Amino acid sequence: MTPFILFCFVLFYFLILLSVAWYTGRNSNNESFFIGNRDSNWMLVAFGMIGTSLSGVTFVSVPGSVLKDSFSYFQISIGYLLGYLVVAFILLPLYYKIQLTSIYNFLNDRFGIFSYKTGASFFILSRTLGATARLYLVVKILQDAILQNLGIPFWATTIIILIMIVLYTFQGGVKTIVWTDTLQTVCMITGLIVCVIFIMNKLNLNISQSLNAMSLKGYNKIFFTNPNSKLFCLKQIIAGAFISITMTGMDQEMMQKNISVKKLGDSQKNVITMAIVMLFVILLFLFLGGLLYLFTGQQNISVSGDKLFPTIVLNYMPPFVGVIFIIALISALFPSADGAITALTSSFCIDILSINRNNNLSDEKRKWIRHLVHLTFAFIFLAFVMIYKWIDNASMIGVILKIAAYTYGPLLGLFSFGILTHINIKDKFVPFICVTSPILCYILDSYQKKWFGSFEIGLELLVINGLLTFLGLLLISKKSK
Image 1 (cartoon, helix red, strand yellow):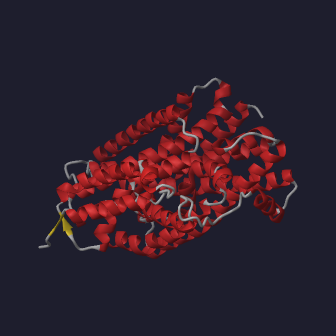
Image 2: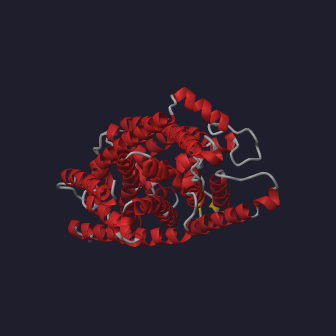
Image 3: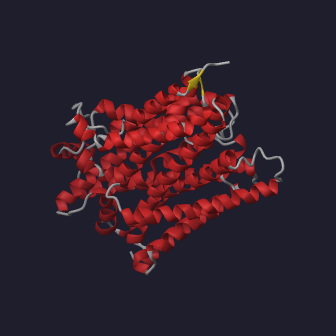
């Protein structure tokens, strides 16, 4: 199938998204954009959040990681499930109780304006870096598979994708994203299942035979019991729990969808349902990775990592499978990118510019500011995607988890301190504490081989970062009135 025909399929898919956006975004206002008028259907939110949580990086990087790390990523997924229980039964009741539009208002009520602005700023930094890394990976695949052959340069491909995202999120915001994410998650999971079935048929294997073949190669090992290894099961499970607590429960993008649901009970059902379904979807991605490496071994193909899935599907499978892959890949891309730009717009407008608290601004003026911020973040995304192209890391999932460890750690420390203690702090020193903790973690990570020998610190760096922030806040505590 020619690149032009593939591009036509992409445009057709986008037109469907645009139609959904137009229908759901009619008569929308700032309340619709920020929290969907608190009237979203919990089942739609739950299903759509699977696509947001997984993203294009999971779609490509998780199968590619099987050669190096086997099925160890499932250990992290078990931790995700535990973390989502904390989000559902500790964080969500808190957010609903105080009726937040931005979850970082909790830090303002608990500590003060400096903590509030610091928390929001770390979210904006983390989500910008993480979302653009996800965006870069998918844009790169689309560039190599389609647009490069049409003579379109990489920067133009990025602009085209961002224009698509801005067009269908510009007006409706969360109200639109709840529906488009659901559509995109359906396409992504359908594409995943079709690819798994087709590759098994190519290998002439059923599920049981596939698992036996993977076992002989060491691909499907889940639990690692060496305490010194960064893949040690206890480390991975604990890290996974804290990743989901921070990257979902303390993340405005994920929480603005949850608090757009009218009732707390429905929002909790949303989180638990999403967590259980996502566990099986991730296992299916790992199974796909094992199948892909069995196929490369059978065909003597030398490819691995993030290039594995797209290379096999686009070069060694029939054209219709390539179309399904491209649509599924875009479906994995859009939920993470559209939600990120919308959440960043919301957080910057509410937390940094405080447009909701400025009574001197008319509704039209607030809407104009929101549109300007939305477009500004689209340009920022373009800049960071070009930076990632210059760096061109081999595995983007490792980059994203590392970014999360450094940038979500201070949020973990701030929220934990606010929820678990009744201690007041000297608010003006909070920015210093939250900047110092990631710097200390970077030093620890850089010198860990020298200091700890064979013991490896992996994703638990996030927990260490949060603990350092927590201890730092204790240092600047003051007597309660």
